[in-house]
Each structure stands twice: as C-alpha cells, then as structure tokens.
Image 1 (cartoon, chains in turn cyan, brown):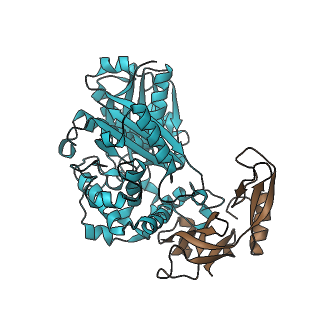
Image 2: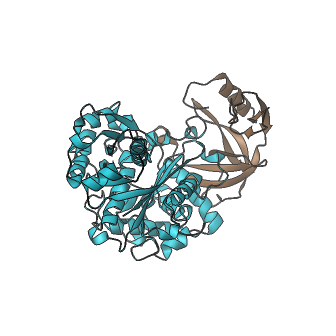
Image 3: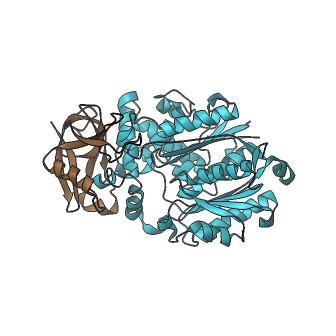
Length: 385
Length: 128
C-alpha cells in the first residue's frame, strides 16, 4: 500500500482497580467507543492486533484470542503481540505494518492488562522475573530498583536531584486529576511527593507508576479508507524502534536508554521533523527518572539537563514540550499492554483538539515514546494532523 | 546461581564463585569478553574459553530495595549495586557492609561469594 496510515477511531476504558471487570470486559469498554468514534462496525475492520503483556496477569493463556472473539471480530485474522511495557506500541507498529504491506486496510488494535488482583509483592515478583532470570533477578533486583540504579547514576553524573524527580510526579498528578479515565485523579504537593514511602531509594512511592487494570483501543486505516471514514484522521508519519541488552549491567551507560535514542532518531528521520517540532508528547514515565531521561533521549533537551527541564516547567502546557498531560503512567496508570495504545489515544485527542481542559494549543505534531522493561524495547511514534 | 535448574556451564561458574573467583568467557574468534559468562558469543561463535576476571572495582550505581519481590521479602531491605570492575566490565549484585550514609558511587569494592538462600549462591560486593 502506498500512502499514509491514519488513526480513525479511539477508545479508552477507565484505568484503575477494576474489581467490576476482567480483561475481556475491559477490552470491550475500550473497543466500543473506538468503533463509535470511527462510526463503523467490526464488519468494516479487516483484522485485529491484541497487546497483552502477561498471560499470568490475564489469568488466561492466549488472551489475544479471547479479546478478539469477545469484541466481535469473528473469524478475521488476528495475532497477539508482547513487548513488555511497550506491548501497546508494538500493536500499533504491527497494525501499521499490516496496512502498509497490503494485508489489511482497517485494523483494530486493542491493548489490555489486569494487574491489581495479585497485590503489590506478587506483582513486584512477576515483574522482577522480566529481568534476566539467571544473572540479575536472583539478586533481588526489582523494576523500581533498576530505575533507581539509573537515578543514582544520573544524580552522580549530572547533579539531578530527587526534588526534580518529585516535580515530574506533581505534574503527572496535576493533569491526571483532569483526566476522567485516570486511575488516581488527585493532585499532590511537592512536599507529599518528596516525603512519601521509600520503594527503592532514591525512588519513593510517588516516583513509581501505578499498578492498574485497563484497556485502550485504536483503529488504524490506509489513507484511502481513512479519508472515507473520517474528516479528522491523525496520520502516523514516523515510526522508530530500538532494543538493548537484557542485562542492565552490560550497558556502557546508565543515564539514558539507547533503545529510545535509536527509536527517536528513526522516527524523526522518517517524519522529516526535529524534536523542536513536537508540540505534545506522551513519554514512558514508569518512574520519575524515566520521564527525565525521556526528555533527553528524545532531544527535548541535552543529555543531563532533564532535571532542569522539569524544574523550569518546560514539560507543562505552555512550556517547550508538554509531556504526559493525560497524567502519564504515574497518575493515569500503567496497565502494561494498554499503555502504548492509551498514548496513541491521547495524542490523537490532542491533535484533534478534543482534550478539553488539558488541550495543548496548536498541537499539530505529537509523539509517543513507549519503553519495555529498562529499554530492552522502545518504540517512538510521530503523529500529525 | 538462580532458581532455575542449572546447566553444567553455570555450575562451573558457581563452583568458581564459591572459591572467591569470578570467571568470565572470552570468544576465541572475535575476542569479545563476557562477564557474567556466556556459552555462545554474540558474533555467532561457540568457541569460548574461560578467563579469570578481576574481583576488585567500584560502585557505579546503587539502590536500597525497600519493597522487595515476594520471594525476597524476608531479606529486605537490602542494597543492590552495579559494580565496575578493574577491567571495565560491570556486574549487578547485592552489597553488604555499608550503610545508606557510606554508600556512594565510586566506593571501592571487592567481589565475594554470597549464599542468599539454599537455591541462590551468588556473589556480592563488600567494601574494600
């Protein structure tokens, strides 16, 4: 297929501790509004890609097949993708590829995860096993722990402070409080954020994203079909992806994610834009330090200046690049498989001018940055009106 | 080394750790060195040989695990660090014999055997 691929429909389930639904109902809750948004039915969709990061959390083997069937996709082609916390963006990338390859014209992407039912110690355990199980997991390292290692190194090399990290959390909560789909819709003060319970010092509770249940859906279409479906398509103009060593100790640098730098470089080149052109971004703030490193890895500021970037308010609406004005993983929540799709939903809303109180003025070009693990996966996507 | 069933290769490494030695592998074809060791080189070669890595180095990054994974609950809090050894290679391990006040990037350390639990015989860092 020659031509562009566009987002023509978006839907979002309420993120949170959802005792009222399992993964199939959550997926439906995201797909229904996406179909309504595009004003189409499943009969006009050629295939689906389902993103669920972990069977163990879904309490279901092959959760993709379950979701595809439950949302009414019948006998159409489907497969499930997994790229840890970047699973949702892997789904978007796969859908884009199916359309560009000519295998489908309209593709439904659903990302979903149910995580809260196991409790924090077990969730921490399952997540830790995504680290190298032979050489790193046995030492008792956790995902907050991996990012805390990067935080201490970032502090050592650049003088980044914990107060700057807490400022990321304050921003996330400010915007999350305005997002009806967010898990924690409440503002926090800098003092509360700084003095919270230690998780893996220097990271405390407010430096860590939430463990959430949720789902998000996006419908992607070829240029020809997109123009027939909607007057307001949002085009995917740049895609980039990178990866890194399984062991964090094998990396020469701990102050950034090489996968993100590589992914960003490819996406900017493909879209023919520079970091200065990005008007709004959703970046992977699984931990406060991760958002600070994302500013740098994406070129919003120089390496080492991410702490200053938040301190100056440059990632707020009105700043240089508003980042995570949907509340981010910190306040909106982080149901692994849903996150990348949720980022696509938010950027689409922003580019259509439908973000309400959180609307970024003149949002013409948006970016999503979705990281799996500690950068073993990273996908960066650029969207334009 | 881990909770997974061990291979002969890993057993060789663990036996050396018990003696206070840290064994890496070197590719005979491209010369790449790996610590922790690998049985196969990333260049595609299977021709690897053991070498003895330095056990002295310094802390490159650190954290205190206050909220542990379920399986480590009874040991928390504990400190995990990435150490950079004298030859520039880096490994991740726990560190004992330090306090939050003495823990810092650049702290000189020595690698030593460490039995965390019955199924986890690993190495750790201790201050030099």
